Amino acid sequence: MAMSLSSLYLSFFAAFDVVLATSLNVTAIGAKDGNSRFECWELDAPFVSSSQTGIAGSQTTFLGDVSNITYNVIPAGFDSGVHNTPRNQWIVVLNGLAVITLPDNSSVTVATTPGEMGLLFATDTPEVSREGHGNYFPGVSETIFLQVPTKDGAIPEHKVLNDDGPCTPNKYTALRGWATG
Ligand SMILES: *[C@@H]1O[C@H](CO)[C@@H](O)[C@H](O)[C@H]1NC(C)=O
Ligand SMILES: *[C@@H]1O[C@H](CO)[C@@H](O)[C@H](O)[C@H]1NC(C)=O
Ligand SMILES: *[C@@H]1O[C@H](CO)[C@@H](O)[C@H](O)[C@H]1NC(C)=O
Image: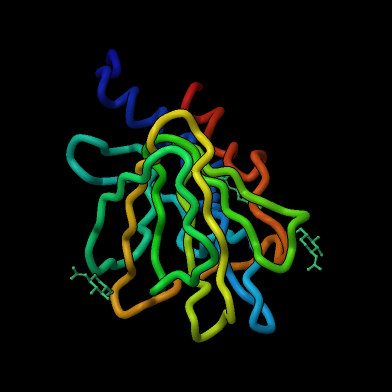
C-alpha cells in the first residue's frame, strides 16, 4: 500500500512533465545584409524527460550532431580583432570573460561569462557577413571556451525571438522553479 520512494520520485517528475514544454534559448551571432548582428534564438527541439540511466526524469534537450571539439585558452587582455566565425559552431564559455562587439554597431556588445548564458551559436561566416565580429577579453584571468562545429555546418532549427539583440537573462529561467522545486 505504501508507495515506494522511487515511484513517488517518478510521479513527481511525471507531474512536472505536463507543465513543462519549453525549449532552450541561445544568443546567436548571426548576420543580415552582410553585417553581423546578435540574435536570440529559441531552439525548436524541446526539453524532454530523459530516459537515460543516471539522469532519468531530468530535463534534456538534444542540440544536434557535431563535428569535433576544441578547447581554447585566451590570455587576459587579448584582442581578436574583427573576424568571421570560420564555420557554424557552438561556443561554450568555461572561464573568464569574453566581450563580443560588432564592427558597424558600437551601441551593442555581449559580455559572455560561464553559465547558462555562456552557450552561444556563431554563424557569421564569410559567406553571410562581410567583416564578422570582434572579441576582446578584459577579465583578470584567462578566458577558456570550447568551439564545437556542427556536423556538415548545420544550423539548429530555431525560431528567432529577437532579430536585433542577444537573449536577455529572463530567457533562461523557465526550468529554474522546476530545478529547485
Ligand atoms: C573540425 O570540424 C570542422 C567542421 O567540420 C572542420 O572544418 C575542421 O577541420 C575540423 N578540425 C579538425 C582538427 O579536424
Ligand atoms: C545596433 O544594435 C542595436 C541592438 O542590437 C539595435 O537596436 C540597433 O538597431 C543597431 N543599429 C544599427 C545601425 O544596426
Ligand atoms: C525560451 O524563450 C521562450 C519564449 O520567451 C520561453 O517560453 C521559454 O520558456 C524560454 N526557455 C527557457 C529555458 O527559459
